[in-house]
Each structure stands twice: as C-alpha cells, then as structure tokens.
Length: 229
Image (tube, rainbow, N blue to C red; front, top):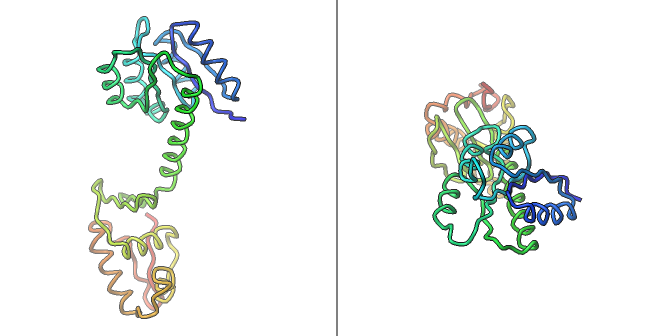
C-alpha cells in the first residue's frame, strides 16, 4: 500500500469526503483543508507528496496558494493538481504558468482522479531521481540522464565521446585513470584507438569545459583524473 501523503484543499465538504474516501481506500495518507490559509500552513509544515487544490476558495484563493507554494523553496517541489469548475480556462492557464502540474475539471470520476494523481507522483519520482543523479564539481554540473553539461550556468554542447569521457572521470573524482583504462571504458568495442588519441581527447575535453577545464588533471606517468574541488 502507498504511504504518500496528499493534501486535499476544497471548501465543499462533499468533495473533501469523496476524495478522502477514495484516496484512503488506496492507502494514501490524506490531509484536509477548507481554506487557502490552512492549506499553506499544512503544506509548509507537513510537506505532503502532492496537493489537490481547488481554485475557488474563501480568503486566499487556489491561484494564490499555488503561487505561494511554488515560490517557496521548501514546497516548490510538491506537485499540484488543480480542481476547477468548467469555464475557468484563464485560471487554469494562469495556474499552469505558476507551476501547477495538472488539472481536473469538476465533476470528475474518482478513477480518473486516482490515475492523474499516480501519474503526477511518478513524474515527481522521476524528477527526484534525475536531480539526485546530477554530478556537481564546483561550477560544473553534469546531468547523466539528459546528457547535459552546464559550466558556470551555461549549457555546453558535448559530443557523445567527450561526454562519456567526462562522465567516467566525474563519477570517480580523484581516481587516476590510465590511458588504457580510459580506452576500455569509453571505447569498449573499438580497439583501434591509441594512447595518443586519449591525449587528444583530454585536450578537447579541457577546451570544451572552458573555465572548468583545469579540473582535468594529468598525473605524469600514470594517466588522468578529475580534481574534486
């Protein structure tokens, strides 16, 4: 059974009870809020895994709740699914621009609701995995899943070969790789590459990294490593 917690925000008791029943039946831990103010408090204090948010609320409306949640570093990662009435296209568009992940129009099917919630939670898990896989070496960021390299905040274009070489060094900082080890790891199916080709690739890598190129260190007589600074 799932242990994720979901904050349901709606001022209609019938909606709250319907959603609470269907979520609890599937093992979710359910938090309930009837106002925008209480939603903000629960969101910041309990950090739910997802927020199901009605737009039409007394006091602070759903759009303001969404805006506050997405502007707060503590809660901006929480997926938000908007509950909307028909004819709220402009509000939906504004909510999505503020960072909402999805929306469901009332009246809704509980099966559709559960499906949307599960999809949003899967996307959240994928995003977390991607974030946790990112390698940081000073001002150098390497995203293995996207094969993306960022140097001093700017995305840098890498060839597949140079990216494999960079990833090899970055995943084991301070470890010294011999030229032969680099060839085996980066070109396992191409025996034609030579030690001299590795030297050329290292120079190309340093040049492509620009100001971060000095993180690639030559260990004389042994090979190369990435400094862990």
